[in-house]
Length: 166
Image (tube, rainbow, N blue to C red; front, side, top):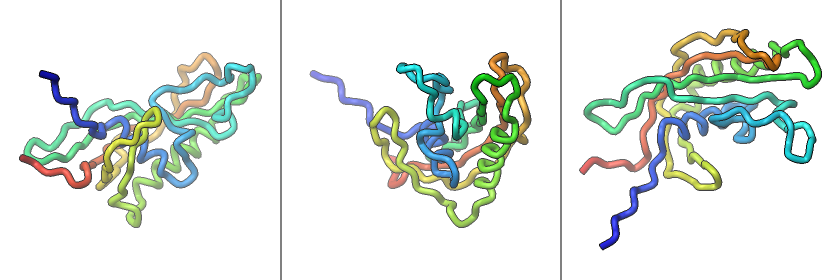
C-alpha cells in the first residue's frame, strides 16, 4: 500500500516572497530567500546588481489557534551594491525598504490574492489579508563585502483560498 502524497500547500516563506514580488517596483527576479551571487557563472555581473535584491526569512509569529489563518513575522532584508566600490549604495537599499513600507499602507490591493511559485512549481492560491510593519527598517553595518543592507520585520496575515476545515 502506498502512502498518500502530502498535499501541496503554500507556506509562510513562499507567501511572503510572493507578496514582496507583487509590490510595485519589485519583481520575482528581485526577491528570494537567499541573496544570489553578484557574478553569474559566465563571469558577467548578476542582474540584481542593477535593481537591488530583497530577501525574506520567517522569524516569528503564530497561526490562529482556531482558524486556518497564518500570521508570520518575516524579516525583510533589502540589498544593494556597487561592484568595485567600497561605498555601499544606501539610498538604493533604502528605496527598496521604502517600497515595502508603502505596500503595507496599500489599502486598494488588500486582500491580495497570490500564487506562490518556487522552482517552477505553482502553489495553490493564497490571499494576504494584511501586512504591517512590525519593526522599522534600519541600516545594518555588518557586511564586509560593502553591500548596503537595510532590514525590517513585517507581519502578514494570510489564508489559503478555498480552504475548509474538516
